[in-house]
Length: 267
Image 1 (cartoon, rainbow, N blue to C red):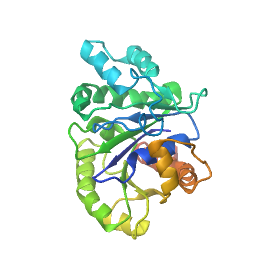
Image 2 (cartoon, rainbow, N blue to C red; image 1 turned 135 degrees about the vertical axis):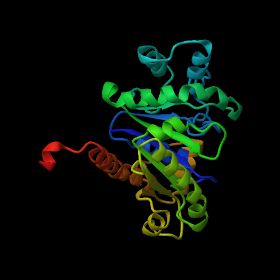
Image 3 (cartoon, helix red, strand yellow; image 1 turned 135 degrees about the horizontal axis):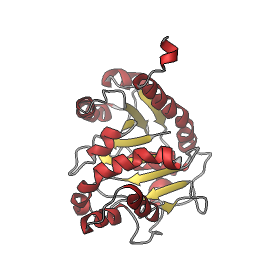
Image 4 (tube, helix red, strand yellow; image 1 turned 180 degrees about the horizontal axis):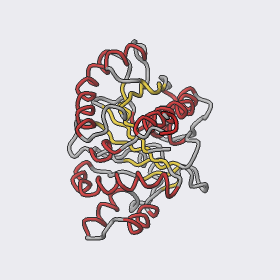
């Protein structure tokens, strides 16, 4: 399918919980990459600390700083060794753990570009989709190369006036950066999370950006995704996440078709 990047403007609209819910219900092989410069939270939260200490994106950054040439097969070898199986032993839903200390975010800057190129290759070479948790835009060392190269950028927000107000400058910044990189506004869409008093139609109109999916307010499941426990696939949040896949895929397909129209269809 694609590389899907999730980000937010500010506050806590549930980017990580949304990314995790999408990953756990993904219909095919999928990697959730925690690329939030403010630090990953899945190890201490959903996985309750049950991860090796030497596993994750920081190890890849350290290898880069050590002088290892993280390209091609060398990056591929390092990459698969850093992943954690979220649903063992199937290795269908995998996690690349993020950094644990925001002070480490500066070490990630040299690898963002290489990750962007590598993520784009995984779909064809390994039949693997990537969901990237990019955290908030307004943070030191944001992973712009990942956002600008993604097939779909989902700005995550709550459908209420504070959420929409915070999203206005974020939409502007993302649209400007994407346009300057030649991608246009096509990759940008909205993911609404939690409760709010504004309809998806209103949010889309006011932000001039399509809403791809809406995840409902489901405190119980959100708590499990944030702090650990057993996820009920029949919960409202997980059912909505599973239902969002078709709309996400449709949005990506439509954008790709617009970028590379079939000559036979226009002849």
